[in-house]
Amino acid sequence: MLNLVSYLNKNHLKNFKDNIYQRLNSNLYYNSIVLGAASASKLNLRAIDTVSITSVEMLKASLQTMKIPSFVPVINTGIFSANIKEYDLTLAFTNPETINKLYTSTNKKISYIDIILNKNKELYLVKDKLSKLLGENIEVLTWIDLNKELYYVMQFERLAVFSILGLILLIAIFNVFASLAMTVIEKKQNIAILKSLGATNKFIRNIYIKIGITIGLLGTFSGFVLGIFIVFIQNNFHIFEIDADKYIIDKIPMVMNLTEVAVVCLFSILLSVLSTIAPAKKAEVLSIPQSILNE
Image (cartoon, rainbow, N blue to C red; front, side, top):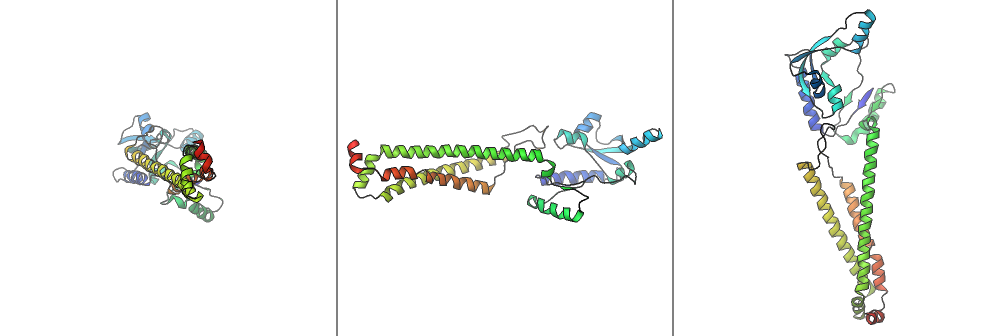
């Protein structure tokens, strides 16, 4: 099975991969292995310790021939930690020479190949090209295909958060509408005086529209600056941390999507303008004599 995997933290992965490669290809230790931190702790192994390993194939052969299983002695030349308990307990890195000793030539095969892309946007493009090139006998999967449930949960959470923020935005716009509507009632005498002095309905309407635009711009700009500040603080000072023993990262990552930010900002300003239509219409139809006498 061929797995196509795209990683977010490329720099960390590259340094980790180079470090493992250099250790495994050291001339000092020909048969070498790099164990995960959990495995090394469970076996009480340190760097430069020797450990004997075997394979399922060797165990099967020993049972069939009623002989003692064969073992391949290797030197633990390093210990890695992926901050994921499952990986640290079940994964180990070694060189092709050691693999050749563990498996016979008849059953020797590669179970999967991980491909790291430089650009995540080309994920499905590369998948389609590899699928056509390799044919139907080899399955090509992306990291999304391998983690469908987690990906769908993240997408649902993203949609839920966006919906909740939308409701909060609608409540805020309703407050703007209510505030402007109350302004029409409280300032109806002033509006009547402006009309008696020659102010047109268009002039009155523009006043309320400008108020709505001003409120929308100030609120949107304040939220935009606050959002950038929170993302900057989190990415640089790691305020919101998570358990590094359970996850591969020790903090909640935050990334700004400029397209989504632009849509939210435009939507906020648009709703602010729309909320002024009803109060402006009400101000236009105010009767000058009635408004002055009632006051």
